Image (cartoon, rainbow, N blue to C red; front, side, top):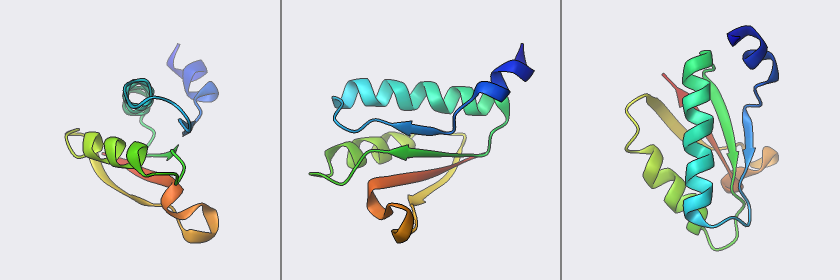
Length: 88
């Protein structure tokens, strides 16, 4: 039931330390669920590290038609280690 799924939905995803293909699959699942549940904003914690996950995730986000925008989180909340995604 959609109501129960919305109650248990977590808009924050932590993919730190994962391989790019694994992380992208989880991001895709999160975005599909957010779209279905009409959630307009999610956060993806990819960490700062070498920046590979951040780059791969943002490259993917640029191809998704229902993504309105994405940006770095505010500096005091994690800055470049977190991508905030607006779902349209």
